[in-house]
Length: 455
Image (cartoon, rainbow, N blue to C red; front, side):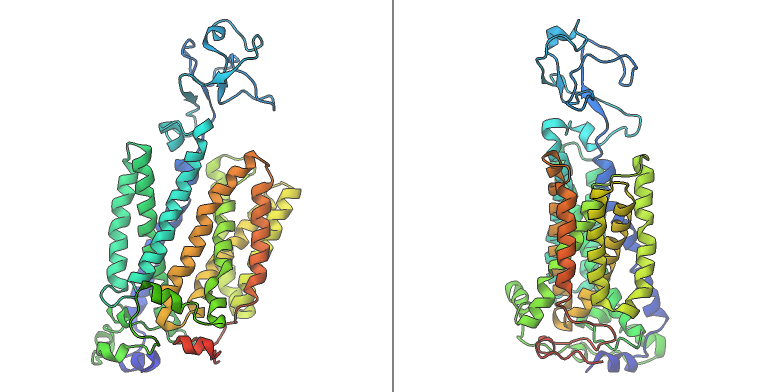
């Protein structure tokens, strides 16, 4: 029995379903705070070698007896040997050594970060940048784990959603009170796992409820456990009888599957492969977090800069809402990626920051479209599993972005150039996918194989 018939029998979309739909949006407010927390909690303030024979605060106008870097600035990682430091003004011996007694940090902006707590600077700075990668590795793992478990009858979406809420709280507190680098890295990784469960589960449930509220979609999004959130309440809203679980079974091929079987079903044919390989999911996250973790700014402090780069996402999201029904999902996804890549490239040639800011807006638009487009591409029987799989690919891109930024020590233009090329190429790949605008979406894998995308 199709979802439209079941929904009509239980009374349709009423106040309870509307309330649940909007409550599911509330937890997502904290997600960007976690995902971009690295920019603040792992910020690296100005620093220099601690000179134990000089008892004065950082920032004194008196020049410190420290060597200079090739660009003429004071070295952050080298000092003169101790005996020379007592009398040298920095112009005597040219011999330098690594910092012998740790570092002194400028605390005018940040009192404490992971860099200052565990001295993750100079030779250890890659560990500081790796914290972002650890978090996204957790997100990547959570995408597969929750995508699979939420589709299992014995678990379902609601238990997994509640588990993600509780574990996000626990691991978030553990990270805040970490006493070592290892404890913090593990807590942040597990936070990433939990937060992904919150993300993909709420997206799938919201799509299920919202799609049927809008008649023009006509798409079968029902999963057997959605009754926990939307169908059971029909008896309260319209006095209809509760639908038995057997009536909610969605037709699917292949019977019961183990984890490998479910993921093999995602690539069972060429048509479905186009929808599931999702190279653009990797590129969307890769480009978005590449820009977010390597913001050039406008000469403002980090807080104002982040505010500006965050504010640009509002018109990007709102604009997406109005544009998608005109240009379609495929064109919206493709051109937002291509334009983002072009603007990153323009910023390399003309580094004013304006082009990069606009590129961030288009990359956010691409991220917004990706969730909707992906949910519409997958047939009902593997939709949650498909969201988990593509989210895995996306988080893989997010994990690699901080690592790529380290290449700026080799060539300063290497990271933005790679981000630009990847975004443009992935945008072109999207044109291979089918358009889902005003289409009746597939219920089974056979629907995708046979091209049944009715209008």
